[in-house]
Length: 427
Image (cartoon, rainbow, N blue to C red; front, side, top):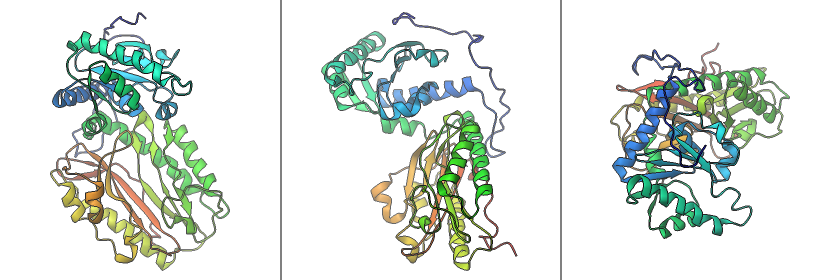
């Protein structure tokens, strides 16, 4: 394709995927599971451009693979470009969306109706070949030429995670440059109906993966064996990758954040995990459960930890409603008993979308350090966190639920059952 060409699309192109019929009810009735991929992409791009208009951006240049996917649906070698920011997408307020791609791989994305043109990235391999200094100017000159073509050369350019060398090169071309990452994330905080359907599908797949883990828990199995079971099932269910390795057992459950190891499970221990999964359609699935490794029954101490964690999650879910400020949520969150406070989870809730997103609401003592002002809004999706463990305690319990904020409150997206024995409900 000629680099300067601009394509338009009809609605009956044979290389487009079929439209999935959406019979989605309004939020508050049930969680939708069917979605229209064309509408999904169109509405996300429209939300991005509405934010750009509000913030005064003439164009944004997106290096973050998550933002690229949000804006266009385009995905290519995702893990590689998470660490190597050499693929970028130019999104003007008005005009063609242009993909600057890794050589030889443009065909992965050019079928998308959201991509109007493609060119080869100007900064491929620049760092590994010590060419950052020589590639920055051609990069900036091309962006400046596009801005002159589509907006007369005036206006603000947003970049989300490019190197400072590229930002300086853009400024040297006379452009006003601003980091737009927080603006894009703020834009992404409200999920469309189709996004919520994607989140529900991703959750269902992750729940199937966790069920496979629970079924595999027995004395002698290793944490890494269980993690491999979860990861393999994530891939088999159409997911993409797991961001963390948070699966631990016995004394490694306290403190939290120990990663899966070769430790072998023993009878009578707890096993805790956090899904942290980039799942189906590129949407995050984030819930946590803790299990008991039999034979035998949980101790009273294990049950008390689990019951407190369950109570914390339920209490904080009950608080969620549109219009509630982040500070109000923090101040009214479940009061953590003093002996467990030092090992509290860092957040009360955090946003969920294509990964952990906006907002993050910390506990009252941490709020001013980690959180900002804002309110809960319909269409936000959040995970509600709990970790209960005490300093020098033998074990800890991790629980977490994912919910969508509705017009009247909150509705569960995660549906995986809690452990009846650990809740003390089994005789």
